[in-house]
Image (cartoon, rainbow, N blue to C red; front, side):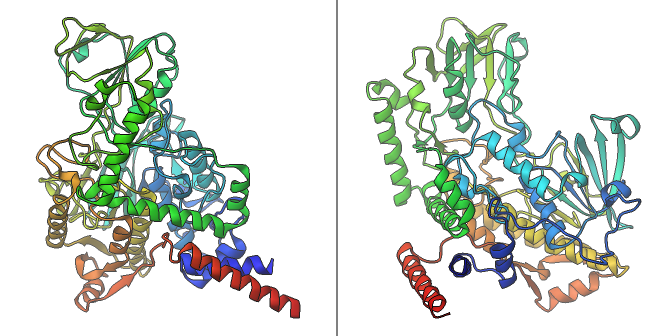
Length: 614
């Protein structure tokens, strides 16, 4: 035990240095079976944020809260946990339009749905999962993980499900947000179908991938067969023996098609643009490795750090067209095509992209190309001309093809951030006016003239090479500092409103766009869900995950405008160049395997020697 504890501490200090207190928590208190830090436990005689009648604040103060979080997905959960555990703020309300936690992993339940990020990296740093069953996690397993995290941190009592946010208006007099919601189901919808919640701070954790996008093709409304979007899958529909068309050839289709091809009598994949496809090399994680991850945390941390390193190295492959990694991706795709479709040179050209790697989302799959060899699967590369009553007419075809089911793997409306919520900020300025040119946010998290407001997974924060949880945790820590400053003022009886300087926000955004135009994301040879028709890239971050984390490693108060009785003090902070530093979560490796091995051997020998003398 002495050897384990000592090794544990040294490894963690070297790999992910944090405060010594947090280190001890992770070493001696963190559950070895779950890898979670302890959930919130009230201190003796703690009086702030008290509830009433033996109920939590979320139920007692039904229409009032210190913080309202919109969204119960990965981002919203992360924000709530930070407030409960690190800030000890219990007066929060989470609003979720669905029936449970999980966000995109609850909405997307199509056949074959899974993640394209390594499982060891796809979890919160403070709630790592040692029990992933596969190298790449599936939708059900991810949802189980998120549900478990929500239960362990007690998020359910702070959450209102089936509750849709219709509008959010800033009150310049009270310096509070007034959020209007409607309740869709349950008994609450009978007596409070619509009501307002006032809060000191509002956090939008609605993400970028939540509003399914349809298709604009003549005759679409005339089609009388079954249509379903991949994000709204109807599991009551029997696929067996059906003639099915899947529109789209991105990551979703690469996951759906291999599964429904097993059941359909005929599957037609409608391709507009081929994707860069590289091997997935998925596999089960053996029980012995799961046990090591659970009972030897340093092993799990090392595996996570190496996964982080690998993914970060992948960044140049999807951003720099002339990089060695981009060339490697081209080579991997070239070889995969010929290995999996050896006798189909007619498909090689159809499936070979004519744009740079990274311009569109890279598809990571082992079983997409092989299904094109099945007799019941056809790749259709001609454009859809129109829909008919019972099928689709393709350009160049004499007649329409009949389909029982059409699957729209067409993605999401990713440019309308926060839609359809109607948001009005300072001086009654609507968000549409602030975002006249495009959606933008200072460092991706705060918006001019929206005081005491934060965004998670907002404009220009998407990663196409690494885990988004890395970004979300950094954003959560940054917003948490702003929330703390506002609540400190409230506790003193003062009001405080913070919003970023519009001038500095616009400069940040313009510099970001200039940087993005020099990446593969801007390649004019393809369209993508992160690039608008006019060439503006509103969704992606140009740098690495570490670059983004370091950008949010401090709040520079000079970048913010402050209003209210406590605003003068914040302005003085900014004028004097004051900053609040934020310790980022270090996930990458700090030592090579060889150096780490030598150090561990020496450490074990040292501990054994001391133990022997004792």
